[in-house]
Image: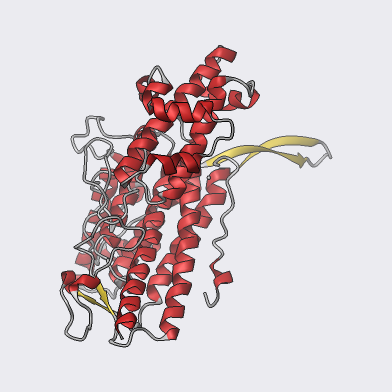
Length: 468
């Protein structure tokens, strides 16, 4: 990527889907802590991705194809070669390692198929949730300790590629039927059904793979750099910085003391180094926007759980409060940005709480608009909204609430997932959507972190040059 035009991420909206160094936000069957660098990650600790191991491997093979441990080492070698694992010369130690890899692979897939319920009683989570957890936890295993602008460890890079290839291979078998005209030998034209990849996966998955490769390439580009890092906030003897130089960049509203502190030469970075950093920051920004768009679109297409619908307030006004309600309903020329400016939001926590209340009010008004115009079921609300009377009070309030929610997310791009988003992920049963959502979410987090790390370097460089 020599110039900014090469950073085109190739993202196109899906026909079937419209718009962290982290740990996890609330999980599916347990609750875990918030992300420690980027907060839009949702998972529980899954047994699928264990701590990084140079001999870990993944596979597309089904359990029926796994050879028993008693088979010959040469057969095991052939199986693992097909699975993309490392090839080794035949020896007693190597054959033993191959057997260990096979056993580890069996254990991981057993846990995946059991839905993380090791009792085998069928009380585990569904396949979609299990795969979503696996992708999220694999990301935490590979990138969880990578807090710097530097190439990824080769073993972790191989682990990421190997296991992601395995998890994403599920999408090869998610298809949809389409009609096709075919001529028989006697000239008769008949219509047959054939399969093709599901449209949302066909468009979004290649785009996500490209974003993935671009992010790894950005990290690899920092092999030779002019800056370095002080361990755990300590100062390097070669640095002219003082502790007060540990500035918080715009995207971070609180100090991350565990993030290594970047250091630059006493005269600051060279123009070449600054140009390289700006270029990579712009690329990571584009990747972040594309991943966020895919993630938002996939979430928008997920079904709203019945539990969330049941929890909606009876009154949208009670949910958002009288002040916001009056501003939204009585103002002729409504401006969501002006409303947010008047609210004086002091923290991301307040912004997330407001987003939850506005989203709940929006769906409350949509449901009322649906009931007042039709007796159709709740699942038809989204389609029916386009046919409603534009002067309807509930419809106007729902549209304005949606515009406020969009403006809020634009103003706080790192905002954690709302209650509706987490509820959708928790109760989602569509495996394809689960893969696209979790994959785009972790890439979004990685891109955000890279931008933040680059901004940290710029802050330190600017402070150092100003001192000179």
